[in-house]
Image (cartoon, rainbow, N blue to C red):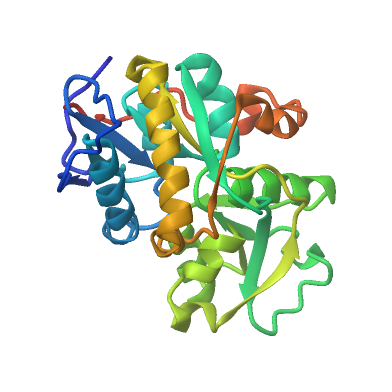
Length: 288
């Protein structure tokens, strides 16, 4: 598999299995990278995903190494390079990188439709969003599906002229709006609910978009279909037997996924240029 040099900004935590699962047939080498889209800080994502990846390592007999990047465009550049063995990516990422970089979905959040939200400080009078006309609005990155693509489309559909300010993460959006630096920003329900309570207490959701199939957990073709099945089975077993680990990453559960699940996103008919998803950048991606 293509690998680049590990960057200083890429968070890296290894989780070594306690006991090898009897049915697992580990690939070689016995370390796989698991990339997480950086909707929140690297340290927070590591705390959230660490226990789940540790359990996945134990059940498969393979060490899953947590990886993320400093921002979403850098993560997109790593997906374009096929730099992760497994990755948790947004719906638009999946439709693009399934085709360009040979990722195949194995799981997604159960009982979930992904919706973008526009948040503002509590008590703000935006008059059906028209109050944002001429304003600077915060978004995590151009290619953040719910938080940026869907919310920007909402404003465009209403002929609201705005200046996008890309602040790297969902948490940064919420903090910027709470601090009064910008009147509103784009996010998604899951990250809004997960933001620090003292920040969330200052904000309110003023608009919610239509729902779409949520983020994918996808495996690179180089991992092999047989072990991809092992990963899928292990994720389903964890969701059934240790649901607290899934709740720890902000989800109610997992369900098996297939490529056609994201046809609703493809039906939006957006060109790659329209999505704003990065094809390159200053990202230096993980290696084994």
